[in-house]
Amino acid sequence: MKSFSSSPTERTVPLWVVLALWLVAFAAMFFMGVVIAQRTPVIRGSVDQAERSAEIGAGYQERVESNASLPSQIPPYTPDSDRSIRRSSILITDKPESATTEATKYTIAAGDSIYSIASRFNLEPETILWSNYDVLHDDAHNISIGDELIIPPSDGIYYLWKENDVLQRVADKYHVDPKAILLDPANRLDITSPKIKAGEYVMLPGGYRATAVISPVVFEYSKDSGVKKKISGPGGCDWDYAGYGNGSFVWPSATHSVSGNDFWSGHMGLDIASVLGGPIYAADGGTVIYSGPISGGYGIMIMIDHGNGYQTLYAHLSSVSVGCGQGVSQGQVIGAGGSTGNSTGPHLHFEVRYGGGYVNPWNVL
Image (cartoon, rainbow, N blue to C red; front, side, top):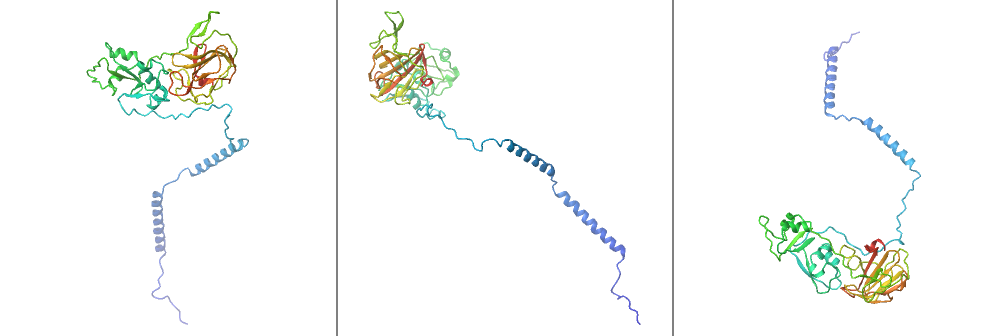
């Protein structure tokens, strides 16, 4: 039998070579692992974040369980219509910059009031009043259709410079910084050598002064009692209390909105919308202490003393339905709306007084 031996092409690989190859492969894998580790960002806190999320979730669950007794839906708000006051809509916007630095002139038309004219030119009503003393004499009622008013370019006083006027004294009198007068573009002054001639108008920006309160109601002393309570004029009388108010007030006109002047420093009442001949009501019970025409711009007027310190006044009426000294009840018709006296259209001028002082009617209606 022949013995077989290995083919000359088949050779046995030495063990040390195999081990060397394994070492090289291991080293290469280790090197690549280091490179990958250096390029990959390390995300930290993932465990902490998970734990924190679990805590927040647990806290939220506790709050939900603790609020389980709250209503699932908030009930809608329902206004108390019985106590609400309806007023005319007033659009309130930021006052725009004046479009001109020149004063202009405006001719009073039907339905105008100082308040409405001021609103039209984006000015305060006091600005119109103070800048037109020669026409208005500090009385907002002293306007007539066709009268011409000066409209200043900005709020303040459009002042007629007088002989011997001095800038500092004028500025102090009307509470204005002299620099503001010099720099106001409407005045066009040379600030290095300002010269103002008598008879020239000067804008006092932001200037103000006291406003005189003018009323045609003048009380006289009663011949019988010696008490100063009779009102001068053909509609006045010596009177005794014939009725009393309850301290609350109702609207004196069927229309509950302002049609002209609101309550402001130059107008101590409300101009309430009223149609010619429409009913005018007593705002509260009391005694009529004047009923008839009166001088001073109020036309036909009624005044009621409510026996509790309050008095109310109703002006520009076309007619009266009650006489002086008569007792009236709240809501009773006392006259008809009109436009007598200084008026540019039908409306009711309504005043509220207490202890001789003026009260804003909005506070009691």
